[in-house]
Image (cartoon, rainbow, N blue to C red):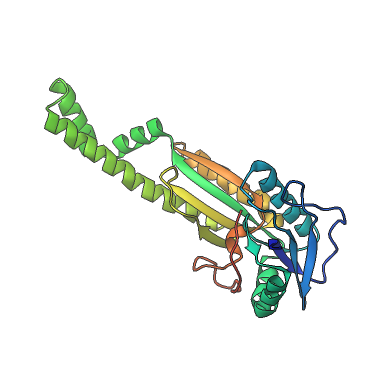
Length: 256
């Protein structure tokens, strides 16, 4: 039977609750496979597993239990190995890699920040910042709306100005918040967000990070920010080029 992997832990850490269950219907019992100094938190993998809310919550609950007594390297939902032996083999092959990440991420959590524009507010902002846009808008108004070509030109200029503001705001959001984080990981681009960035934060500095988010909100009322966290450090199991100098490197894939 294939093996579902929730995360990697220090094998010398505290034991998990004996009755802990994970994904599946009925929920599969969770166990720990050990390989040297490491442990893999696993269960049997149910067939045809889909990202339903019940199983997503079960995955997160197992990670929360595993991380309550120490650091856990979280695997993304749906991480499945052919069998237990394969998991133990990978623990041995990647031992130094995993141990380094456990040290680097110990006591740290992830906050994901997504930003988008308030459409009306950003239009007011780009108009206020661009004299040429204001002049063309006024000229069209005085001309009873302007010609088709004038309307088209104005529309294209507005779109370009908003796109430029999106890029500037995305860079500014990351710059303002990364000072309160130990590492930064840019998420995949999406048409729904102008910024999608994860920040690695010391657990005992979380309040300071959230305060920095509030400062960004107040300083940029044309932005809407959504914060998700604290999370297991999904985006930092594999360190990227944005990780701050001085942090260590190494590790394997994973996410929420």
